[in-house]
Length: 136
Image 1 (tube, rainbow, N blue to C red):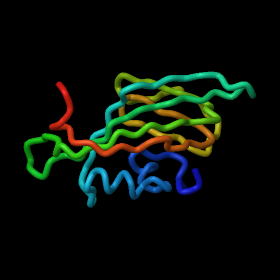
Image 2 (image 1 turned 180 degrees about the vertical axis):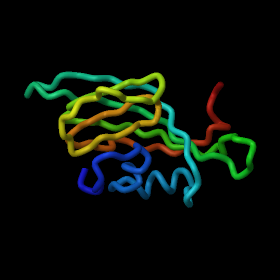
Image 3 (image 1 turned 30 degrees about the vertical axis):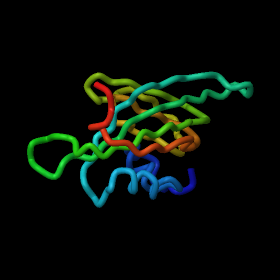
C-alpha cells in the first residue's frame, strides 16, 4: 500500500491514508471523531509462492457525540487482504512482547488485540451501514 508512509500504524489510520480513505470517511460521516474497530473474521492461508496471506473483515463505527460512550450508529464494514505476511501477533493485554525484530514495511495494529506485519494490503470491499438497522 503506497499511501502508508509510517511502518507502524493503527488499522483505521492506514485505511484513511489509502486509496479507499474517502469511502471510509464518507461511510462514517467522519470529521476527526474517535472510532471503534471490531474484528469479525480473520483467516490465514498459504499462497502457492510459499507466502502467507490473511483476510480480515472488520466493522468500524464512529463514537457518538456525547460523553456516554455509545456508538453513533454510523459504521462501515471493510474486507481487507494482507499479503506478504511476515508475522501475526495476538496479545490479550495488548503487549506484543517478543513479536520479533524482523523489518516489515507495514506493522499494523488492528486494535482487537492483533498486530500484523506484512508487505502490503488491499481493501477488497467497503460497505456503509447503520448499526441501528442491524439484527441483534
